[in-house]
Image 1 (cartoon, rainbow, N blue to C red):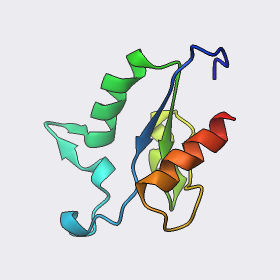
Image 2: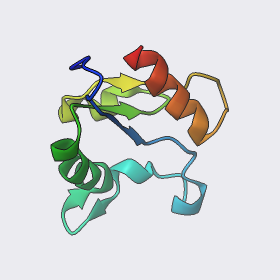
Image 3: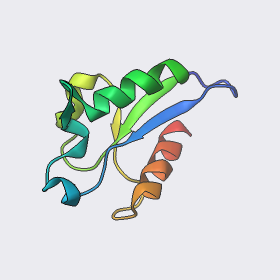
Image 4: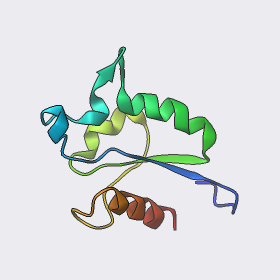
Length: 91
């Protein structure tokens, strides 16, 4: 990551149990032929110096994205644990 004080790190929070999606991985659900996470990347990447994905479980499911995948900073901590993980990664 560009470590200048003006650099902005983007993190896509791709966690969650998918209970409202019938257990499916929300990030990989397609909308009009493109996964939700790919749509997020397309919109966020031009606005940040570096981008990473926060997700637990098998990081390999995001390998094709070419982005770092990090876990939560605190297990079962919800979305803010993902933000903490990103902050720890950037430090």
